[in-house]
Length: 488
Image 1 (cartoon, one colour):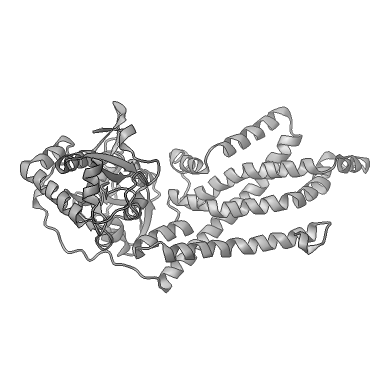
Image 2 (cartoon, helix red, strand yellow):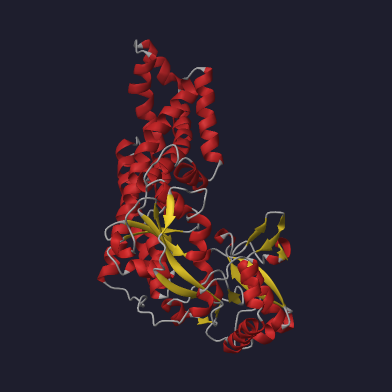
């Protein structure tokens, strides 16, 4: 148990001045504490705030690390880090070890050192009540949810199954309840707390272990002395019964802890950049472009309508338009996507792509409204007066005089907004859409390097944005009174 203020070493993946090396164990003892990386989003039972005292962290990982640290003669301090960045941040020296339900996968064995196991889990298949599925082989061609960088993900990738990736432990089961997926494959320790629970009577767990695996502590490749010390601490905990007492205290001890025999894994394999990976990147780029274009096609007319309502509407209409703009500009688009997809899922069950387009479209409509409002207000008043003198109605004046001129003024900032939207589309990966940035992060883990996937991702973003910028520039030149090309 530990206080959050002293437990979390940094808001991001950071918190130590040491950068690894073979003398890490000596540095830990000189410092008097061992820094361990984890993600609070993993929730109960791994590491989470105590409901009775939110300033204190409790959980499975906290107890294990406290016991290990005590046997090393130091204290333990947690460093908050996003789950997907735990291993890269360990490698760059942001903390000494990783312990966060870290599974002993083949990819991790190649990349970092892994301690002896301290917990045995099963891969549990969760389905909707009444479904006939009894194994992953019954789900060929179906949508199955899991977490990225897990043993379950490795299993699903071997089969012709549409894998839906999540970052949190609650979201996969929420989507399964709503019928957005056909099953969820995750660790038993997660399924028993978030899937097959009384508050979710529509879900049930298949009563067979799909596979078994182990949780371990991750260390840098050069820290063999530290690994030996941690392995010794875990062995001592098994011998004197402390490990069993910790697990029993959290109701995690079961028969798997004594009858597990590690099997040779043939699941994960290190990937190299090839034509198949390039094809996956191109498919993800198409998803990014499709989401961006459709979202902007929603944002433009809605933004124009809000701008006109705010300038020319009656008082209630102006108040509504202003309220809409302030709400969507003043709250993060990521929060809006979560609310739309998960928060309103029980009332409006949108698919991932639909929710992505609607969420980004509604958000950018607020920004476009201000762009168009500024453009309309920039038109000289004489234009409206001349239109009235010619006998045009207010609607005709708006349609034939003001909006065309406002479009020319608004074109440059609108182009900038679209390019910004193209990049913001990376946020839709949080609602299970595999777009360009998500594809990059998945393949970077498979390759063990972010260099090639990162450069390819950046190149594809440029290929998507540059033609649009050039098209907008040419359109500006056609619409501009000043035809000098160097000005544009």
